[in-house]
Length: 165
Image (cartoon, rainbow, N blue to C red; front, side, top):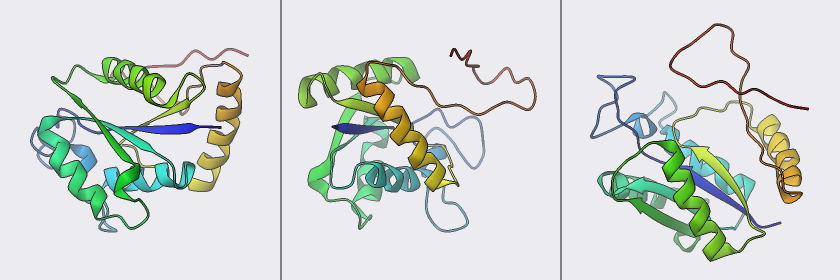
């Protein structure tokens, strides 16, 4: 299977202000262990696709910050890293649509695209890897697979997934 991780790296920097701001949004914040959420996402992507290509969608304002952080990571060779620069940030759906077009053009119709927001913290890497393996198998059969967590309270700031069988 040709799994292409797509990292969405950017954001408005408003949700965690003043730590996160427009010039330095949440993916670039350093956590207690010294790594940023974006660096953790790159490490996760490289574990999902060892030695394979990784596409990052970002804006020109964040490109150099993203690239420099990536180049500081030992586990990924720069030849594996590909970038798609948004001319203007327009939210998640257009970024994913642009990435899907590029993945299809560059890696072919049979490539499976795995979208990874750069601002998510996933602590159970093993369980996540197993879920990705199961999802990738479904995606190869033509299904669209979405990951989510069960909410414990109503929240207007996030979307909800209505799952089927």
